[in-house]
Image (cartoon, rainbow, N blue to C red; front, side, top):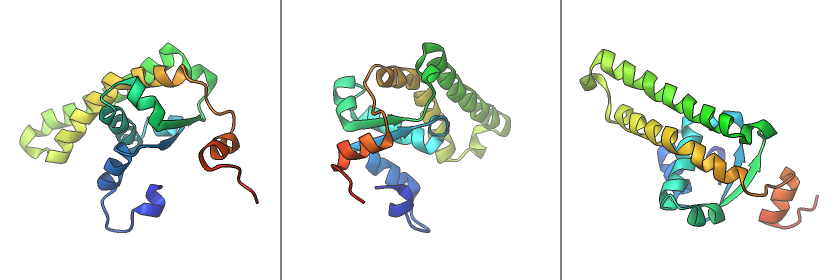
Length: 151
């Protein structure tokens, strides 16, 4: 299921993301844009969280295809991604401090907490991904997930 196919006008994107977080099997197409999207990171972190933060429970639920450059798997790149989420978190925290906590919605405070989680776990998740053999092409991923696809 994809958000574009499953979520209609006026429907909750967060409810859709929560369904992905508890799914048994999820295809993750990892890109720089994915790693910087709060929606995608929520889905990835929710999969991690509902796997009890254990790689033995997490990895069997994921089919990974990466669009990332080879260098993105290096420790420094993983830490830079975590740093991105720390900066996003710090930016939101500063806005809340400036306006006062009463100006922040419950969702703003939940987002702040989520960014803490992204920051503290994304490098570990990416290190797990870097250590597994990945599909060489999108066609190989599709064949694995759906069987041979014929035109």
